[in-house]
Every structure is written in structure tokens, then in C-alpha cells.
Length: 277
Ligand SMILES: Nc1ncnc2c1ncn2[C@@H]1O[C@H](COP(=O)(O)OP(=O)(O)OP(=O)(O)O)[C@@H](O)[C@H]1O
Image 1: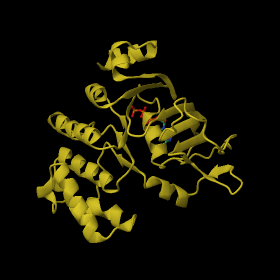
Image 2: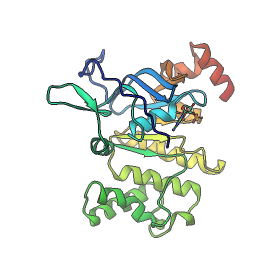
Image 3: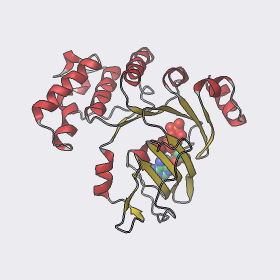
């Protein structure tokens, strides 16, 4: 992974600005900048996600959607601005005087526990059986009792329709089944936020609908907050309450799926949707 050597800008204000509604959003990007060398990928990006909301990020290739998820997963560090999660800075820690400084690896690891991510390429541990893939992080990161972790893993495998595959290795599963295990693995950490990064892009076409149906069921039956990057516009329409259209590292338009897909206001949104729909 390339590292970003650009110095971190100190945020001017250590308190998150209040929402219009008076309710602090679960996620707030506050003038977030991400640079790779001189390439500015996110340009003073502001957006919020409410608790329990399902938000889809759309936009052309290279507009910064995956970067946003990687920043939220603390796999990357911001070059400027602050990411707030549940009223606390994700990207920073508070000094005793209330000012903020960039978070170190330890704080980032702690922050990561609230957030689960499912990747395009599944990223399962190939040498571990399905059950161990799911119990590994709860046991070793959260310190959960192994029996409890296994009981939870079996419940989750039931939820994703794979209770018969407890002892299989990932290589013995189809792509769709591997992605279901990856979803169970993310949920095993009981995250408040689930990040989905083009989770069906690597699947054979006949497996896509099953995985999307499962995610739709999870969205409807839990109170988890979801941020999805997807090229599946029907999924975005069915599952999300808010769609954010990105271009060149900024939100050019946001709104309900109905508004974005049927009456987009911005020319870039219309161009993008004409190309993908
Ligand atoms: N580790 C890295 N080092 C250098 N540049 C990077 C790195 N990661 C991403 N980029 C650049 O950042 C920009 C945004 O990438 P990102 O993957 O976030 O876009 P995206 O909107 O998710 O695109 P896509 O829809 O194609 O996945 C791209 O120009 C990409 O080349």
C-alpha cells in the first residue's frame, strides 16, 4: 500500500459542528482531505450518515468511493480534516486540553472494532476453515470466549444460509458462498457500521442476486448502519435511504434514491446514470 507522506492538517475546531436536526450523525466527514503525493483524491469532503441509515456511494471510477470506505475502516489516514464516528474523532484523539491530534495505530485499532467491512475479493483466510474464519477476530481482537464465538458463528452461518459449511475451507466454496462467509465474519464483530465495497463485482452473474438479497435482509432486519459502494443500482434503490453522487472527490448531489435515479439535478449525475443504467 502506498503511504501518504503529506503532513496532517491540524483541525481548527475540536468539536463536531451540530447537525441541523440537533441529532449528532453516526458518521461525519468534516472537510476531509485525502492526498496520495500531489494527487488530491478527496477534496475537503463533507457528508454525514445518520445512525441506522443505509447510504450508497455512486460515481465514476476513480472518484474516491473506495478511499472513503478505507478511511472509515482506518486502513488509510486522512491528510486533512476529521472523521467523526458517534461524536468521537475516528481519525484523531483528544489531547487533555480538548484539542485533537492524529490517532496512532493503537487508537485506530480500537476505533476499527465498531466498523466491519466486506471487500470485493472476500479476503478470507485460505488456511482456516469457515468457522475459524468467523471466530478469529472475536476471539483474538475482542477477547471473546471461544465457545461463545463459535455459537455466534454458527448462528451467523445459519443467517447467511451456510450452516452445512462449518468445516469447509474457502477454496471448497463458490464465490457467492465465500462472500456470505465474509459477511458473517464482518457481522461476528457486532459492528455498528457495515461497509460494503463492491461486494458482488467479483461474483459470477448468477450468484449476485442471492448475495444482494441477503444484504437487503440484513439491512431491513437489523439496526446496522450501512455505507455501500456498488454498481448495482437496483440494490441502491431498494436498500438505501440516501444516495451520494461523487465526482472528483466531492459530493455533487445527494438525496433519496427516487430523486437521484428519477430526477437527478446535476449534469454529472445524469451523465453517470446514462452510462451505467
Ligand atoms: N494507495 C494508493 N496510492 C495512490 N493512489 C491511490 C491509492 N489508492 C487509490 N488511489 C487513487 O485514488 C483515486 C480514487 O480511488 P478510489 O479507489 O477511491 O476510487 P473509486 O471511486 O472507488 O473507483 P472505482 O469505482 O474504480 O473502484 C484513484 O485515482 C486512485 O488511482
